[in-house]
Length: 120
Image 1 (spheres, rainbow, N blue to C red):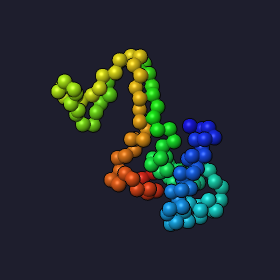
Image 2: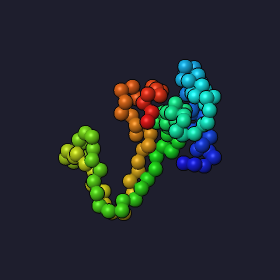
Image 3: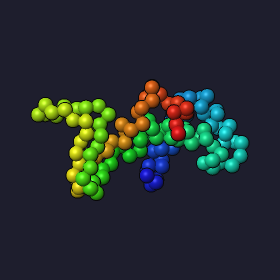
């Protein structure tokens, strides 16, 4: 993150989501009008940006190379093609692992709703 395209996409999604919720938009606007705009003095603006990132991650997937042998724990067991049940996935040193950022932060009760209360 941090390039012009990613920043533009984040701003677009945040403005889009706020435009669909006039009550949130008014609260964020009032917060900005009250003074200095920095991270510590604008918790609603920060929450709006974070909630936009939760629903619309700018980078959908990324990959990493395992630095050592490890395992990835699973929240629920899965059945392999051979019928074996697994609670974790083994990862060997040097193996590439693809991670979906889009599936992260979907733990709230209503995962598709835009709510400033969800943002951290």
